[in-house]
Every structure is written in structure tokens, then in C-alpha cells.
Length: 78
Image 1: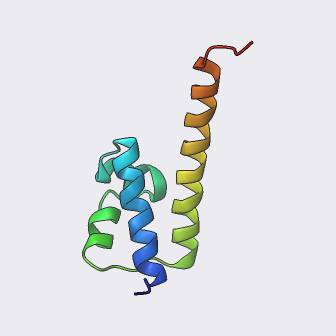
Image 2: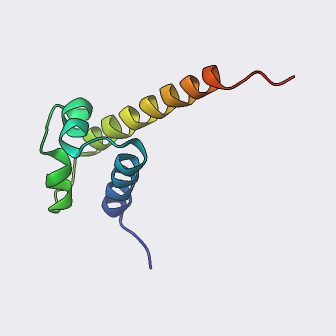
């Protein structure tokens, strides 16, 4: 079974929310300035490509920042 791009995008957002612990309203507010963004996705809204790009860039930036924090906290290997 193939997934549509829209379903794949929503799955990426949902997976990030689960991994990060972000509340959906806060995620929407920070990512695109719309606290109802995730709720609207869940209701079937399809974002524009520009919005999807913005959201994916937001997720990538936060994940990169988290990885950098973890690297700084990791004990030095000798």
C-alpha cells in the first residue's frame, strides 16, 4: 500500500510530536504561527508545499539542535 505525500507528511509531524513531547498547539504556533495547524492536519487539511517545507525545516532544525546538545553532554571517549 502506498501512502500519499500528505499522509507521509502528517506521519512525520505526528512522529516528531511523539519523539519531542511538543504539544500540538505549541508546535503549530512555533512552526507556522498557527496553533490549530496540527488539528487541521488531523482533520484532513493539506498544507501548501511552502508550508510543508517550513514545517520540515523547523523539525530538522530542532532535531539538529537536540543532537548537538546530546553530543555536548556525552562523556568524552578516550
